[in-house]
Image (tube, rainbow, N blue to C red; front, side):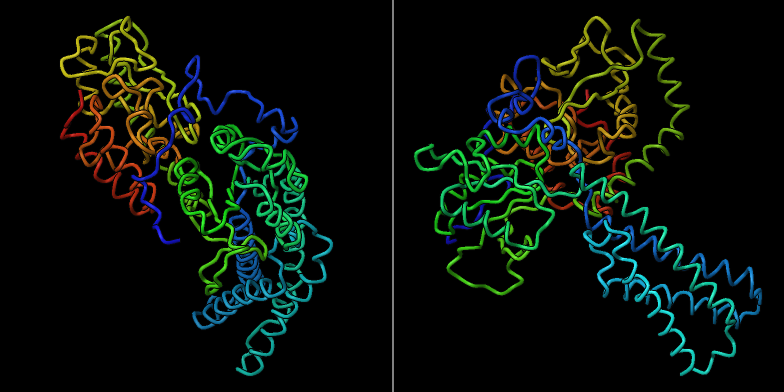
Length: 517
């Protein structure tokens, strides 16, 4: 492609695709002819979150390692019982080496592949051979190093038999879980294809013939009319146009979006990207019919079908797990530590004005879903504005005296740790905005190109925009544009250290009280 794909500021998401409909519900939630083409049982399965195969296989590896080490240590202290430093070093070295060998041999024998994990009985032979090979290697190494006389035969045999029994029991449990997740679609990658016709047909046939058993094609989207693209492509329905794809992805789980377009159709690819890049999915361009053959590292693969990477879903696989652990652990910690402050703030709110202590508001969350956000009430009860149709400004007479302090210090946001524990928010992320929030007289989605790309991750209590001074009032186009730029930078450059850095800077930002009213 001769023209380079623009950065995030260059993509345009039409507000019609992602704005709200009657009652404040995202248009992505509305029922339409797209949904009618998807069977009811499939629609139910489509909203169940996917379990990452790499995380699942990695978890099984860690379980194998843990069981191998723990059993070896327990048997050593329970039977051998020699606490001399030399013996401990010898046995601990053997236990660690055996655990590493087990992971290596299990990998070589394919014991960490999803099709193998789901069939516990069928992997019995592989598991026996791999586990036996580990101990055979251990005995050969001991013979060559002349340390076999220092190692208890009873310990070795007990570890071998007990370890095999534990591993077999674990595999049986994993097999039950994997079969259940396969049945409910949680280990499937749900795919939509952009582009029908002959190119789309060849891509579908290639995917069918490939080794990718975890792919489920939901349908095809194409802007061209029925005369050029039929309603049925290789047995899969044409579900609508690309504009309708954005709405479909808001109410159905989509993991992978594949463009079946030629590399020469540069303008069409860019036009499609401007519409779909706001979605939290992996985006690939088919390289099946590419005229140029490049080095293998240029491609990613689904089975043996090559693709060019256009966009990767933020926070996938182990990044998602790290973020989840970070949110839950820190939210529980902060709620425990700040509970006395919660009590003092609640008393101050009740003493100054009538009404509830907490204020609940529906705001945009991950993938434009609505989440209920908790805050300490800062406005007079009779002036409550759940949809934020009117932004709070400097010297706003709706704000109470206690509320003014809470807003300036950002203490009003502290109850959002409850929303984090419930899973609707993260500690760090783009700030969630109210449904009808505006910059001047315009909705945010009408002001900023790619505004809704902020929703590719969960919203946060604090964020990169906030610690850089872009917090509080967003009454102008520039303010919401700069906030969105910082949010998109955070999403594209996420790391655990970046999160911790933002958290460390947040107290200083709160004390400054800049732009908060």
